[in-house]
Amino acid sequence: VNDLAMMGGKPLYLSCGFILEEGFPTEELSLIADAMGKAARAAGVSLVTGDTKVVEKGHGHGVYINTSGIGLIPAGREVGPGRARPGDAVVVSGPIGNHGMAVMSVREGLEFETTIASDTAALPPLVDLLMETSEDVRALRDPPRGGVASALNELAVASDVGIVLEEALMPVDDAVRAACELLGMDPMY
Image (cartoon, rainbow, N blue to C red; front, side, top):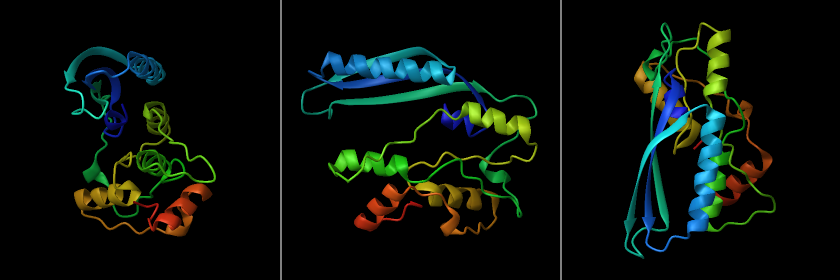
């Protein structure tokens, strides 16, 4: 839903594909399905189709899930990565690096003195509010792998503009900043 929102679209429908390793616990699958249902309802979309494949034990790493969405872009709404212009402001909706560090800590089995929680959220309501209150929104991004720095680089290249940031003004939670320093990482990425 966030990819659709970043293009100015109103997400409507999602498909979902599961690739399950043979023997994947049905209890875990049920928890995943329940969480997906709650997230879809919160985002105002319907899960309308799906598919499941099972692979041999030892070849699937548990479960892989992919989704694809369909939405509509309201008339007159023009948003895209190539539309940034000199003088535009970069607005960040919250602290950076939380999701990346939360995922990394789980994948790598890292433990910190505090829990770093992912900040994932359905962004369509925020985008709708932004679009209703401003006529000057030209480009939106939900930073992917590579973080804020990579997302802004994509915008700069697509729009043929430079972007100047004051990194000290970028919001970074203390726990994320400390974890990045410990691991020699930059929260911008």
